[in-house]
Amino acid sequence: MARKINGPRIATANRLRDGLVVFLDGKGEWTRNLCGARVVENDAAIATLEQDAVAAAKANIVVDPYLIEVETCNGHGFVPVKHRERMRMKGPTAGNSLIFHG
View 1 (cartoon, rainbow, N blue to C red):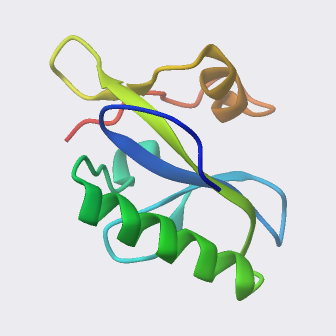
View 2 (cartoon, rainbow, N blue to C red; view 1 turned 90 degrees about the vertical axis):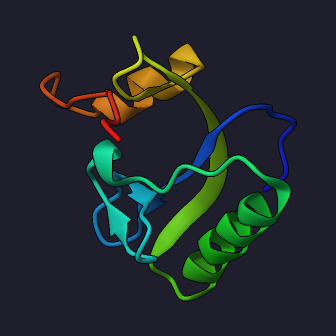
């Protein structure tokens, strides 16, 4: 799962049940809502987030979890840094919000 990224990050994966893009939240649950994603920045929190994501994959809840870098969006929330992740999160419908309001 290790990728070289800097700054705040979140965990994402595809839900095994239906293949939809999901994000790990602060309660350890996987949500479709980017606004609910757990955003971490320090090394200890990053390690914990990664461990929680890997554990969910081992429990057959999600497939291929990984961390992505996010950045603030006009001071009102977070958006993925990479264009690939922005497109991936839109999924089959274009109505999904890409901003995490925290």
